[in-house]
Length: 422
Ligand code: CA
Image (cartoon, rainbow, N blue to C red):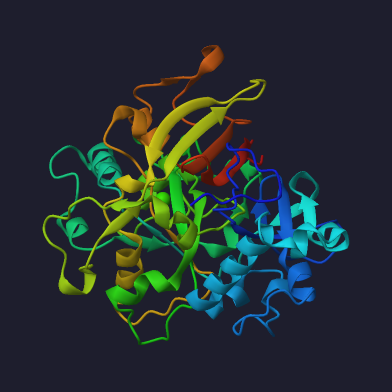
């Protein structure tokens, strides 16, 4: 189907009429935050569309969800309401048979803002954040680096999507600077443990699911219903201090090596927009237990890329190209396992996939793997070399699905390293 908007959208734009990702924005400093969708170089203000009475389907007609400063109220409404909203927005923005917005100059002025003039905010109030470990290639490489090549992947990994509970308070919007963390790491020789700025600061290329309606405490989610609880995906950088992590992680897992900052992209791309890019998930062997067995396992073909841009460089250097489709455990399996003990998820919860590494040297999702814990430094453009991130480095993650003449993309997820505090 060829879909076209009356708004000029370049074929290379991530924000086509087929995409329509949701975010939260302020048109100006003094104005209230509200919900919008990205279209080309513009943001469509859904509170203005709702205010004009154009959401007149049953589930959205009287809702205040687009006048909020987070998407949580809309997320809680569930998939039938999300479908209503998408149909209405797509119809209003299409150029052909729908004059309502196209021919109303006053409404266009009230509802369409140039993206470079608005302030973007975190799209959801994130109450809880969990980070999975769902790439087999990443699990194998990390296991080899930290524990040696004998059995690098623990036996439980093949039976359950392993995760740790992350820190929601330090989830940051793309573009926020990251202060190099200080922390404790391995003693050298007979010295006491080191305490100071991390010497092995890393990025992790991830994506994360935003939870929709959630589930009641004590009521696990059935695998066949799990997809309906997931609203969409964002790009994520799970910044990691490898030296702090390696010293602290046994026996309880990641803590201060991770909790100093996690960056997400501002636009949530819905599962509806991603559906044309669904593909088979990798075969799971051994076969998962019945509660994790899907009728049909699927992933999405989302091309992912990471650039490092040192200070003074005009452009970033591409350091890896990976793809969401490499993940072993699927989004529904992650969500179902999370709730299998009765744990309740709530609207806006964030479920990170874990670092998305592919099978090749060129598709590894973090510097720990790319430089093999600093043993094989990476060459960037202009003669720069990196074992881990240096101060003033900017990390730029991007992600995109290529359609026939259009893209469904995530934009970028960026962050720059500032020196540690004295
Ligand atoms: Ca991670």
